[in-house]
Amino acid sequence: MSSLFGRLQSTIATTLKVPPAKITETTSTEDLPAWDSLGQVNLMMALEQTFDLYIEVEDFEGLKSVPAILSYLQRSGVQ
Image 1 (cartoon, rainbow, N blue to C red):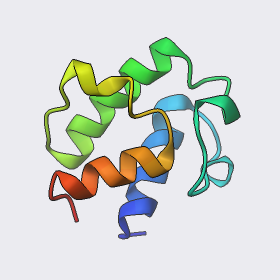
Image 2 (cartoon, helix red, strand yellow; image 1 turned 60 degrees about the vertical axis):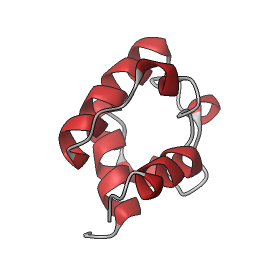
Image 3 (cartoon, one colour; image 1 turned 90 degrees about the vertical axis):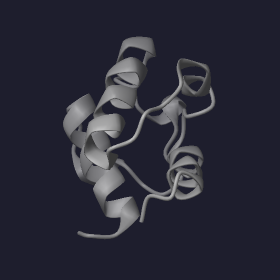
């Protein structure tokens, strides 16, 4: 599971305490009750640790779906 999506899927599943199978390449906050405002903050911190980057607080609001997060990670140079 070395693909970027695989690593993201694992991070989201662990952080939000949901089975990885519930996280697809189109999952968003509407799909997971655990992905609420607190879940979002916890997820942003987990992404920073997992992918060794810093996410500006202003960017949190735009990172509420797997496609948005993948795009952000790719723009940030994460492979």
